[in-house]
Each structure stands twice: as structure tokens, then as C-alpha cells.
Image (tube, rainbow, N blue to C red; front, top):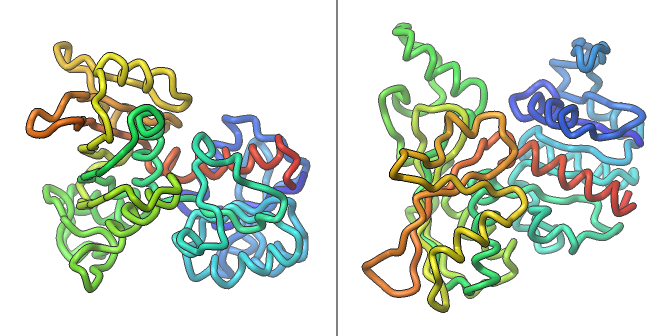
Length: 330
């Protein structure tokens, strides 16, 4: 099995390589692919030196699977070329997510919908993945009417340059290169991605639209506020979910604790609740602060945390690739 990682030199690309190793993902040949400026660069991985190749050479090599984390414009241009060559693309960008002809996959929820004809598969937005995975068992049990979500997102979601800006500000450097329109250290920005005509940001609309697509349910009402905070290690979310019928809190905890990929951390008396500092480098989604919304019926408050570079990106993509191999879809 020939595997390509496109965008191998970036933050998510390097995380994909870590996850492949940790999950003992089997391949016979690994192609590390990046933009022209990185071609020829040597990357040491699992004790072996790999030379980075360009996109055209990677297409010509006809890998069975290509995991893309190279940005939307690269995906729009190159994913179809890989697909035409017979490669199945798992794409981390937003390029294909809302394309009606493409599947938007969280393996634990809807991988069973995949088939051999799916040559470009979209990986959802990081903040969407962790929320829908935690909500999925509750949706099955109670039905979901409405979701109100506010996010507290790590600078790693923007990329290495954003981490550099925050750390430079923290170190007191004068006039560091700015990725954000404002200082991020010791600050909070209620602004992720570009603002849309309706006043929401693109990130907020991603959460709204992707949730409906993954759940295959346009009747679910979703509203989101996405916020960038000066932390690393993962995204946190305050989620208020109104169900179609009443629930039992003990049953909610039981359903969540039995869900693959979800870990319940909910012991506030002993200060146990999910935090990004503990989610860092973990594949799971952590859920806590479970409590009834006393202001209206059938409504639950929950706090959801996950490493956005792991389950929010690399882990989910590798899990999709593993599903394709296991089910002989490539």
C-alpha cells in the first residue's frame, strides 16, 4: 500500500506522521509531499530519511491514499488530479466539505456511508468534529432540536505563524510578525476566519452547516460563536443542546462513557473537568461539566475539549484512511 502525506512539512502534516506511527498504520511506501519551496528537503521519520517531493511527482506515483493538509486552494487544484489517477484523497481543508457530491466524514458517525467511488473525502472542521462526536450518542437517544455553541480555540488552529506571534508577544518582542489583526497573548479575539455578510464568521458557518451535513439532518438548528484564545493544546467548547425529549443525567454520562473516542471527565467536586492542557497530544474527545439547563426543558449544558491537531485534524484523517484499508475500499 502506497501512502502520500500532502503538506507533510506543516503543523498538521507533522501531526499526521506522528499519528500514523502511533496507530501502527501499515504502508509499503510513504511519500512526503509539499509545495515547491520544500521539495528536496530531507525529513527523518521512523529512523529513515525521506526526500520531500512535489505534487506533480506525487500524482505520477499513483499512491493508493493521499492525506491532504495543504490548504483549500491546493486541494481544489490537486485533489481532482490525484483522484483521476486512481488515488483516494482524504482532505483536511474546507475545500470539499459542503460539496454535495463529497462525503463529510467522522468515522465513528458515518464512515459506513463510504464506498469505492468516493475518491475525495472531506475531513470536517476541527471544532465541528469534537462537538458532533460527543453529541452523536445523545442524538440517537433523545433527538436534537437546537445547538448553541461557543468555542475557545487554540492558536494552533491558525498554524505555526500564529503560535510564533503569541510566543513572541509573550517574550516581550517588539513588533513581531502579525497573523491576527490584534495582539493575541493576554487577549481574546471573537473572530475566526473571515466575516460573512450575515455577521457570522466563516468558522461559525462551518460549524452550523457541517453539523447538519454530518448528522444528515437539516432540521437541527445550530448557532455558533467562535473565539480565538491564547492557548495551545486544544479547542474547548461550551455547548447547550436542546433535545426533542427529556433526558436522565446519569444515562447521559453512561451513553457518553460507552462511546468510542469519548472520555468523560466530570467530577467538579474534585475539580475534574476537561482542559486543553490535558487534551494535548491525545486522540480522544473529553466531555464534562454535564448539567441540566434549568432555564428551559429538555436542555443540557456540556463542556467539550479535544486536541484540534489530533481528533480535529490528523487523527480523524488517519482513522478515515484506516477505515478505507480495513474495508478494502482502496
